[in-house]
Structure formats: structure tokens, C-alpha cells
Image (cartoon, rainbow, N blue to C red; front, side, top):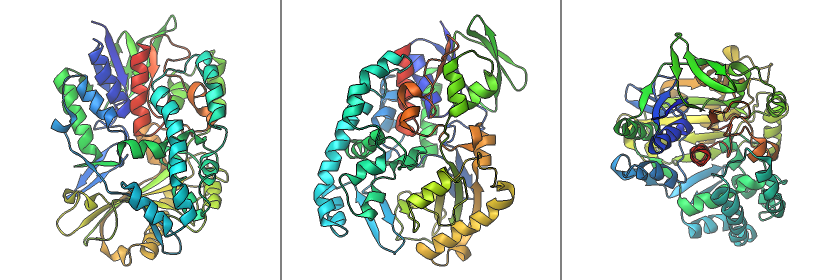
Length: 486
């Protein structure tokens, strides 16, 4: 039986291990964290629970498939609950727009802002479906390590104007600025600027409509536990608290890998779920690939993330499960983060309130929250997080108090936060980027890090920095690419 070692237990690594077992490999999954899940860590502190990573589940069929290929059912391990209100968008003037599971309700909500845009929503959705049918259904699990594969797609990419950005795509159908913001934020969920990210990512509109938006009861951490249980049942060896930091190479292949304690592991194939920039800069730093040298030198990282976790001694009953709180500016905010590399004052916030759906996330009468704020990554040398993090945390609380949660500060009974430094130190994310590479057209498909290593014959890559990209559906699909390569 051939052996495979999977390095990194994010969703891409977990999905790869599960698929490799099905293909007849003996599999060991190795990760440096205390728990599986990669960035999908989970905290339980005195009855307050927090998902540290992804909180939104779309394309649940990708999880169902991991269980079904081993003749098991996802619903026997965890419950995915569909949400009725997917996102509440809250604007600087105090108004809001609910984006809902029901198309009819969504259109009615849009009509309160702009009747013309509401009447044109179906056209936006139809265009999104055309992109989805090609870019997700046909190409998301297609390997792109050969340039010829990319060249074949050029006519289709031009047809869908993939050279345009998401905001421009949205603006073709919607004229009202509030609705343009609401329907162009998708790139921020995978680390990109809507004014620079290829409109291929507009497929997310139809992805959500086709498959829904879900919450894993018990949290994303509970979904990781379900996958962990499956892996143990099918015979995957799991090794935690172990950092693979050296490869022993022979004849363009990995002979063995060595961890921080000096332990050596040998296998026939190796799958990296590490940030590929960290992999190729720090572990396989010596190579003669012009393609890799170019990618390393000119790589554009996703933005960084500041995440504030807090529990309150009262319930904020009117707050939805997912809220997007916009600042006054939109383009200006994104330019501050992505181009000026400065810490913004006029911030936007994604607020996660899991207790809106699952009361187990907090003690009785209390609430649990996660406030995520896009910030520059560590390429910004002017931001000293060791000194500025606490002040920025206070600023986030003040903005929440002003716009949504009056009296919040005195209600908080528990809080902690993560900065881009934590992403670098905990997850080995290059420059502390929240999602590895930014989703530019010139960093997509063949231009992204290949799923089959450019320099080593028995090394394969999965995860956010590889094809097809970041986000839970993207990293799960990268494991499907791996399977097709084998």
C-alpha cells in the first residue's frame, strides 16, 4: 500500500486525506495546531463558544461527498441548518437591507431601496449562473498545471469579461450604491478587493442561490469534529502539535520530511496544505523554476484580518446571524487597506452572532460574537500590532456601539482578539495574510500556485493559495483537483 503524508489539517488537507484513503493510500495527516481545522479553530471559554475561522457554509454537497464516498451520511454526524436571512447589510445612515433565502423577499427588500435595481436582480443572477456553470461546475476541479488548459479557456473567459472586476460586474445591473455594495462584497470573503478582483468571483451569487447558506450546529468547530470522527473510522492517522519544517530531497522528489523535534517521516507522495508562499520561501527555497520565482517575487497577498471575539451578559435579540456593517466610505476604505497599507478609521465590520441560531454558544441569557475587520497584511510596516491592537479593539467596540449595539462596552464580560501577527505565527501565513494570495485574474487558475508542484514530482498542493482559490468551497475543491491528478 502506498503511503501519503498530508501536511496541514485545514479543510483542504482534511478533504485530501479522506479522498486519498478512498484511492487506496495509507494516510497520515500532520498539523502544528492543537486541533484539526487549520484556521477553523474553535474556542470554548467558560461557556462562551467561538468559531475562529469560517462561519458561513455554502456548497454543502462538497462536505456530503466526503462522507458519501465512504458510504456514510453527513447528517449522521452533524446538522447543517439553512438560514432564512443570509446577510443583513447595515449602512452608515442607519438603514439596512436583508439578503434572504427567498428570492421574492430579497426582491421586495431591494424595491424599498431601488425598484429599477430590484427588477434587474434576475438578470444579475442569470449572468452569475453562466459564470458559475463554467468556472465552478466545469473548472473548479480541473487541474491547471498545464498552460494549454488555460489557453483553451481564453475564449470563454473573454466572453464573460473576466478582465473586469466584481464591482464593475455588479454595476452593470445595479445603479444604487447601497445595493452595489451589498452585491459586490463577495471578494472580501476570500481576501480580495471588489474593485480589483476578477468578476469570475461573481459566481458566488448563484452558488448561494443554488445551494443555500448554512450554519453547522455547534459551530464550524463541530463540523471539524465530524470530519475527525470520519477520519478515525476510515483509518487516517492524525498527528497534532507537529510542525514539518524540512524536506529531504532526492532526484526531484521528496524522500522524507522532518518535524521540529527531528522526527523523520517517509512516504510515496506528499500533500501540502501550507500557505504555498511559506512553503516555497521557507521550506523549498532553492529551486530553478522561473514560474515560482516570479510568483514569489510578485505575489499580491490578500488583506489581513483583525478578529475580535467577545461574549456579552445580555442578549442583543435584534441582531441577525450574519451582519455586514458598512462604514461611510467603500472605495476609499478598500484603497486605504489594499493600496495605502494603512489602518483605517472608517472601518467596515462583519459581525457573526451564532447565538441567533444556536443558543449553546453562550450561557443562558448571554450572547457570543465574532467581529471581523479587514486590515492591511504585514507588508504594512507602519502598523505595529503589538502596540496598536488594543486601541484598535477599542475602536471596533465604539463603532459597534454607535451603529448597532448601544451600551456594548459595559455588557462585555469576555474578550480576546487575533491580528495578522497571529495568522503568521499560528498558521504560517506569509505576511499574515488572511487568505493567502489575493484573487486577481493574474493569480487565478494556471497563474495561481499549481496543485501539482512545479519543481517536485511527488508533491501536491491544496488549500487557499492554490487553484481554484480561497473560501471553503474553493479549498474543498482543491482536494477534488488532487484526486483527479492522481
